[in-house]
Length: 410
Ligand SMILES: Cc1ncc(COP(=O)(O)O)c(C=O)c1O
Image (cartoon, rainbow, N blue to C red; front, side, top):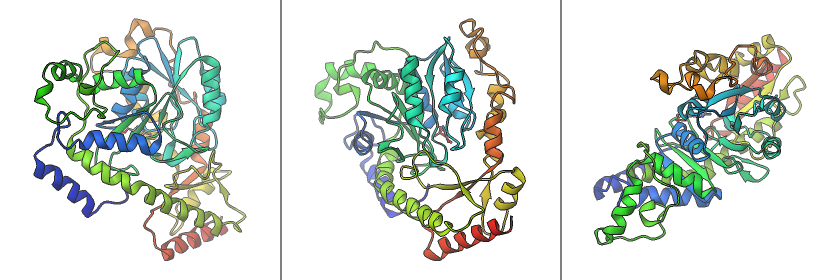
């Protein structure tokens, strides 16, 4: 999260004063309105505001019909929640390499496809867009679904299309470490009505019954807002199933409406500063900028550099004023550290553990350190530096100077 102020305080106060904290039948429609504003802003038919990026990925996978017997290809470099969402729906995550952009490599994705593969999950890590043309081509060729994990790339784009809206479903996270935030939150994005309906049932086990309730008791709802995306005002095709509860509160809805209003400004400042740093370093011959699939769509949260050897990367990252990090050191963002997956403990109960399900027997649950050694090599030779959209001109210049000095000393 980069920015927060009086507007958020006022938004929360507005909800508290109204006493309408619950999204269902709220007179203020904070969550409904946030969903509408988000979907309009990023150009997608449906946005569902949820408790997190993980639940957004889970509901998206469910909506795409993924379950036991299915493999979903995930990248070797992503927060483990991407893979945990796959096991949460009873499927098996298959790990594929990332290329030098740190995004999922379409070539390795194609190599990992088996008769069990149902979906591909590209992850736009630290604001860097994946090669979506390559991934969509592979998906189309093999009849697979694509669910984009855009949790770390809210508002980013690839060739003019917003990340999270290019595949069949997408997920945003609004947890505290993300570009815009309400502490904890996420959103499922999709143009597919069927995906949306499944996600609505899953995110609120009572939603289908509220539809009946609303039909029978229209008079109870004084405010009949027929534009609402919420199902009580709409007719669903999907037969009801037992969902759970991962819906959001009106407080977070109001908070996120303010955060959404800040998104363009945050991204503009991040991108401006990144551009300034790139231009400021254009004469530094020893530095190789991390290859990007779309430098303009990149969120600008980080700048990356590629080195020939890990030793040089480490020396550069730890140089004074650089404050860099090697992605290989980012713990649970590397597949070798996804302990529940590598230990094949995919659920609390063994009968619900996808790794023990008879339907998943013979699927590709290979999580040895050698399955994606190319990715590990890239992650060891890359340095990423976080950018702050509120850096002053002086701070930006200091950063450029520190990076240039560190590169000169290599
Ligand atoms: C790439 C990625 N996917 C999924 C998630 C899960 O999001 P949340 O923490 O909102 O459930 C995160 C969050 O850190 C993430 O970085």
